[in-house]
Length: 568
Ligand SMILES: Cc1cc2nc3c(=O)[nH]c(=O)nc-3n(C[C@H](O)[C@H](O)[C@H](O)COP(=O)(O)OP(=O)(O)OC[C@H]3O[C@@H](n4cnc5c(N)ncnc54)[C@H](O)[C@@H]3O)c2cc1C
Ligand code: SF4
Image 1 (cartoon, rainbow, N blue to C red):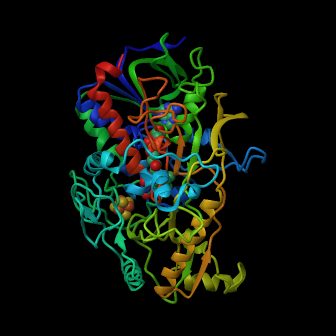
Image 2 (image 1 turned 60 degrees about the vertical axis):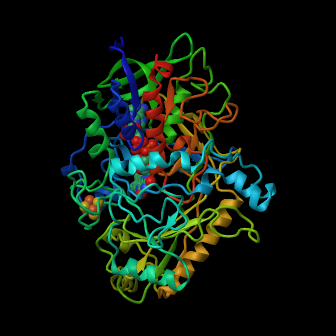
Image 3 (image 1 turned 180 degrees about the horizontal axis):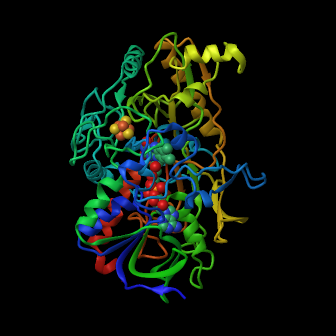
């Protein structure tokens, strides 16, 4: 027998990167919010600088809900399932994956909002790749700017502005869209290695800049500046320098007295009333089923679970899944094209045993539409990123660049000599949505509760593969200019389960091709909002979280300001 709780104004499902931001504007407006979070609170002492535990055994996300329902991937509808991952990279905890993410905090560039219109204008309609379902966003960067700004100040983002109200500053990214003011903190400092990479980029005529990070470069909101000792590339920060929502927006929302955080609450479905509006949610906690009625529901469980919860919430009004009467839930899926890095070997030590992956230098010359594609056979591009982060096990797993065997005493001697002389790069590239890349429920694989897991049917297409080769060319050129004596290109792989997953509940004005409207509320269920990168229609060439958080703030703001019309 389910326990029926008192009605609240808003239920937020998942208190991670997106849901954890939304609770601040909701509670500041005086709405009563219940935050249902599958994980628990984690304290700074839970975050150990332990490479084996964090990066290989997947603590603390291992043995959690996410790992009991890892999505299954196949490259296309005719292919067998790929081998299933052992660990889900995402976190269950208050703060979600912002507890252990890298915290690179990018805005999208103006082009990313208008890929179709800009491609047609500059190169002709034929250059939009065949089979792509890409649409322009229902608004441009200018409409999201104030929300980016709110989130940068709410979390604490360190960075160097490149364009404040149209005035360009070459110390920052001159390709970024106009921002209304500078970052709240100066950028994280460089290292000898990242500074030398910056100089090499300048010799090539490029304009390198330090990337933005939700990590304090100085005391902020009474939280410590970063200590640069590293070992947090999949770990939390034990001095709370990382601006996860667990140490910023969520505690502030709690301080209003309007947020009730319920941990270890596994939401299994969203209920609807007789009019087809969201009535509340059902969740499991300690083996008991609870029904939490609410005036509005915000779904913020990360891309895979957002689609899955909707598809599992079928009813008479929505027989194919909630908000899915037009069959759009799960469509327009894409994962960021993060594979295909370039690795480089240098003839000298790089001193990368300290630092963190958000501490680095970027080049945006070859991203988005920042360069002329007229003679090229693709659209989009890649953001090039090199950073300071090396750990013993990862270092010893280095390739030998064809200079030594992969075993025995010669291999050991090579690794001893070169473990601090090689470096990886991070190339984030444009990915587009396609008709045959989608999410649905797996027909046979189930989680321990008996619910089907999410199935990912997706692969990179020609446009993405060409962008990858182009970005690798540029990265190799950059490393060689900096003095690298050997380079290796990693394969781009397939579009499997990832930390940068987009789509499934796309945002757009047309209900025939989009699940949520321009404010983030379901076209078919007006008091159901969806938060996260699942609403994004393009990926851009940079990490998603700040954009997902800006959109989450905007959706929450819309709900708070129009409560009488949207809430029930
Ligand atoms: C190692 C790593 C590095 C990363 N680095 C970066 C980076 O540098 N920059 C960047 O922009 N992004 C980065 N990301 C991606 C980033 O973490 C995500 O984009 C972001 O956390 C997504 O926010 P979200 O709220 O959608 O999901 P999450 O932050 O994962 O939050 C979802 C929350 O929902 C909860 N939940 C899930 N299902 C249910 C359910 N059924 N009931 C109740 N609760 C539920 C989860 O427990 C979780 O707390 C990284 C990710 C990883 C793993
Ligand atoms: S390097 Fe900085 S962000 Fe990472 S754990 Fe240390 S203080 Fe925190």
